[in-house]
Amino acid sequence: MECSVGYDSAMNQTIIVTGANRGLGLELTRQLSRTGHEVIATVRKVDEADHLADLAHEIHELEVTRPESVAAFAASIKGRPIDVLINNAALGGVLEQHDLEKMLDYFNVNALGPLRLVRAVLPNLRAGQRKLIVNISSKMGSIEANQSGGSYGYRASKAALNMITKNLALELEGDGFTSVVIHPGWVKTDMGGPNAQITVEESVASVLGVIGQLSEKDNGSFLDLDGTMLPW
Ligand SMILES: NC(=O)c1ccc[n+]([C@@H]2O[C@H](COP(=O)([O-])OP(=O)(O)OC[C@H]3O[C@@H](n4cnc5c(N)ncnc54)[C@H](OP(=O)(O)O)[C@@H]3O)[C@@H](O)[C@H]2O)c1
Image 1 (cartoon, rainbow, N blue to C red):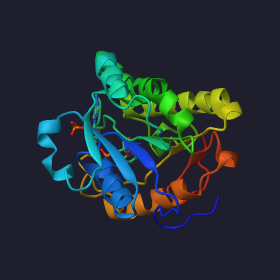
Image 2: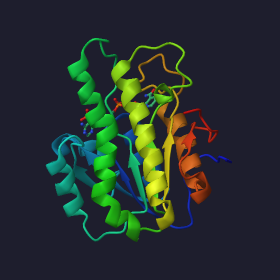
Image 3: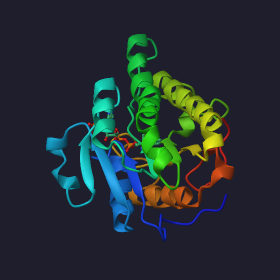
């Protein structure tokens, strides 16, 4: 697919961004708001999100591992059309290979979290114009591209997110939805670390360029930040 930089649109859209308090979520909120979109930003601690006050249209509490938190968030936006859901929140870091119990945390945040949210806000998305679900995944979730191993929890949970997204794409395509996973690059955030290849500004401008161009023909794709296809 073709890619432009940034997400300008003739029509202002309402967009949910999870994990909006820092890293890519914060920059997604900043760039989307700057281009006139209404961002519903979610964070785990609203009382520590003062820095979002001037950026987001509104700020909501959301802990994606807790069904009651997801339900409360969905209830707070009940009846409102949402154009785009960006499932960005995730757990990163290197997991000791044998810490199997900790792996459950990765699955809970990175794979089940986005699915919980899709299920909870599906009525809002059905009422929206774009019917777009963007799950921020990672090249580290690609089985084919895995050349170095390690990071069991993160890799496996992102591979699970990829499968979940493909399932959603198949389940919802008849209803006019587009569901994709996007790799944002290796980015200088708390998760990506200081040696990462690109800044949050660069990553988000490119990712939003891709999101801006998405249409139903992209349904079920695993896309790099420049819009090219990644291997599953
Ligand atoms: N940075 C990279 O190089 C890179 C590369 C590939 C993919 N990605 C993906 O890009 C996305 C954003 O990454 P990032 O680098 O911006 O990460 P980050 O700086 O570590 O930020 C992670 C965000 O997720 C939130 N979060 C974590 N657990 C949560 C939970 N249980 N419920 C709700 N929110 C939760 C965090 O909130 P708190 O502040 O409350 O912890 C924070 O807002 C992730 O999906 C990541 O996997 C990043």
